[in-house]
Image 1: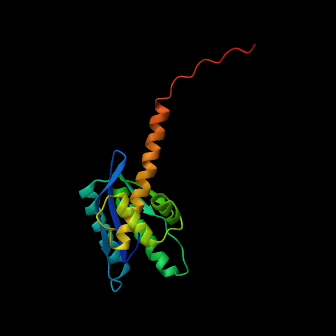
Image 2: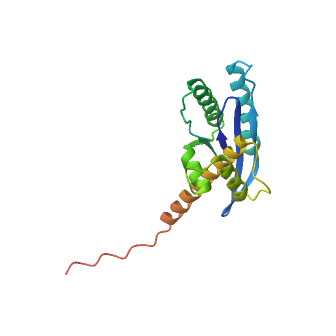
Image 3: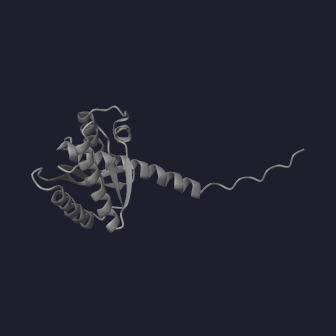
Length: 175
C-alpha cells in the first residue's frame, strides 16, 4: 500500500505483485475539509486508512517522505497525516517504509527529476491501466507502492540468491 500523505488530500494506492508485474487493486484520495479542526481531519484519515488496511490486508505500507518547503504550516499538517498513517499501520501489524520523492520518481520514471504528468503516465503504463490514474494524489500513492514493490522485489531476489549460493570449492593449498 502506497501513501501520499496530506491532511487535506491523502492519496492511497494498493498494488499487488504478480510474478514480474504489478497490478493496481485500489487507489483514491481521503479528502478532509480545511474548515474542520485538524484533530477531526486526522481522525477521518485514521478511520478510512483502518478500513482500507482491513479490506486489503497489505503486506507493507510505503510512504512518501515529507519534503519540507517554505510553508511550515503545510509541512506540519503533512507530517501529522503521515504520522497517523504510520500509527494505523502499526496498530494492524503492517510494517512501514519511507521513500524520498526523488527515489519514487527514479523507480517509476528512471529519473528523479520527472514531472507529475510523466509520473502519472508511467504509473498507468507500469500497472497496465487504460489511462493515467487521477487525481494526482492517487497517482502519487500508486507510484510510492510501485517504488516499494520494486525495492521489495529486488530484496527478495537478493535474499533468494544468497540462500541458494553454490558451495565454494575448497581453497588450494599454497605452493
